[in-house]
Image 1 (cartoon, helix red, strand yellow):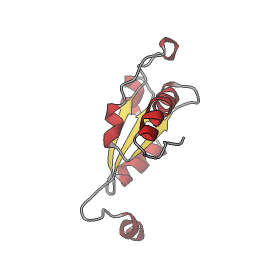
Image 2 (image 1 turned 180 degrees about the vertical axis):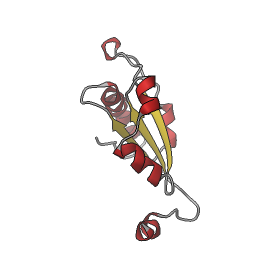
Image 3 (image 1 turned 30 degrees about the vertical axis):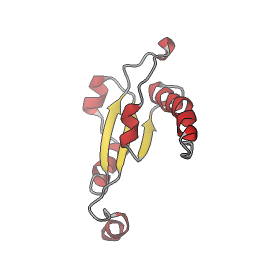
Image 4 (image 1 turned 30 degrees about the horizontal axis):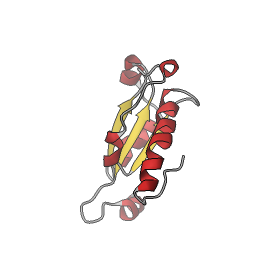
Amino acid sequence: LEQVGVVMGPRFGHKPDILVVVAMTEAEEMEWEDGLKAAMRELRRYFHITTMNVGHLRIEDSPDIDFQIKQGFHFMLGCGGWFGQADYFMRQYNEKENPLRVEKGQPAVRF
């Protein structure tokens, strides 16, 4: 891990921000312990990691999502089943934010 620290260590005190989008019930989130959770604990040395649980979304209702929170993050990771709540959140971001990014001359987000 020492070599990883040299390569991934913060540059000039800067740690990139990562948003991790998960979809689980509150009870599942409280008991959540797997390889991803362990990796996130290790990565906290090199990144600011924020977890957002979207398990409460009802995809059938096609909720409108406010994506202003994403503007503060360098990377967004979704963890959940295909066509589940986390996947819906990520796809909505792609569909709503990319046209705005292209208008500003920024590169489009790819998933």
